[in-house]
Every structure is written in C-alpha cells, then in structure tokens.
Amino acid sequence: MPQEHKLSASEEEYLEAIYTRQEANAQAATTRDLAQCLDVKAASVTEMLKKLSEKGFINYTPYHGATLTELGFKIATKVKRKHRLLERFLVDICGVNKRESHQQACEMEHVISDKAVDTLSTQLGHPATCPGGSVIPEGEKGGETGVSKLSEMGAGTYIIRFLTSPEPETISRLCSLGLIPGLPVKVLRKIAHGPIVIEMKDTQIALGRDVAESLLVSPEEKEVEGRRARRRKGAPSAAPAANA
Image 1 (cartoon, rainbow, N blue to C red):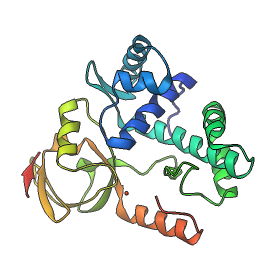
Image 2: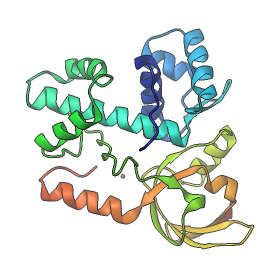
Image 3: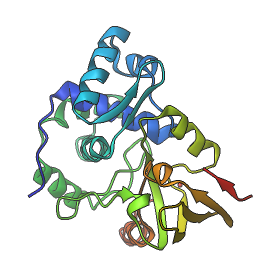
Image 4: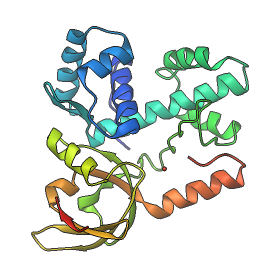
C-alpha cells in the first residue's frame, strides 16, 4: 500500500500552483508568482513554503523560489489531474463556462476521491486535455505515477517530466542546456562513480550524478502509448557536447 500523505486544501493549492508554474517554464516558483496566483500576501506564502519544505514536499530557497520534490510532484500531479478532469466534466456535461469551471474545480478537487476521479475519467472517455487545452496528467498505476530520477535509470529513452533540485542554480543550468519537461533523452551509458552520458537532439551530454537526480523522467514507451490511446479515443494529443 502506498503511504498516504494528508495535506490541507491550502497545502494542496500551493503544490498545485508550483506545479503549474514549473509546467509552464520549468523554473522555480517565486514568492511573488505564488502570491499573485493564489491572491495571498507574500508573508503568507513564505510561511507556507517553509512549512512545505520541512515536510519534504518542496525545495525552497529564500529569494530564489520553490520547486517540487519527487514526493511533492507526485501529490501535485494527482491534484492537478483531479482539477482538470473536473473542469472537463463541468464544461462538457454540466454546461458551466470555463471561468466558473476553474473556480468550482478548485473547491471540488480536495474532496473527490481517487477512485471517483478515475471513474469520472472513464465516463468522460479519458480526455487528454482540460477545456483550456492543458494536458491532463495520467492516472496512477499500482499507486505509482511512473516517474523516477534519471540517475536511477538504465540505458533507454525517457521523457523529462519535471525538474527538481534544492539548488536554484541546478534548475537554471538544466534549462540553459535545454533539458526541460517534454524533451526525450536517451541514456547511453553510466560511468562507474562518474557521470551519466545522455543524448538529446543528436547531442551527447555528460551529466553529473547529482544533476541527473534533478530530472524526473518516465519511459518513452509509456508516453507514446498514452498518445496512441488518446488518438484511438479521438482526443487531441498533449510537447554541442557539454558537461553539467
């Protein structure tokens, strides 16, 4: 049985907001970003970020912002999936307009069960996107979201899902190298006690183990099969050598 993590609705909202920020540009979510997104005071944001950091859900560095940890990513993914499926239901089935569907989904996502939202997804035909066009995350399989650190993976091709690191400089460096969510990367070889050699866009890069731990990935075949399944259902699809 997967471990349950009980969070308040407010805590889930923060994780979801950080997810949305990182989904958009892979960078850390700043205090200002979250204050504007959640319509709260900066002091309240700082207090909550410290709390979530202590619980292990985010990486937080004052004045640099926050990124989701692997645990935080998994929880935020689940909340975002509920939110976007609920928006789809409210717009397509209930006839609610997009603006109202967002607010109502925000209230419902914290109380609907995982089983209920999976059933809802089935009833809706497993839609690929929400009414606004954002991708609806895949559901869990056996209690797992199917993401792992690149440093833990063997040879093969993977899709970068998210960036996570307690060091803001690491996130910036990965972005500067073009290692962002949605990008396929191939692990060529892992050097004992040394870097991991990957290939991206026909370019080979040697990543230090600590940097490779900052990349959350899923096997490419899962991504491809997901797209094929969505197409079968008629739904739209969802995105030189250097050392790091």
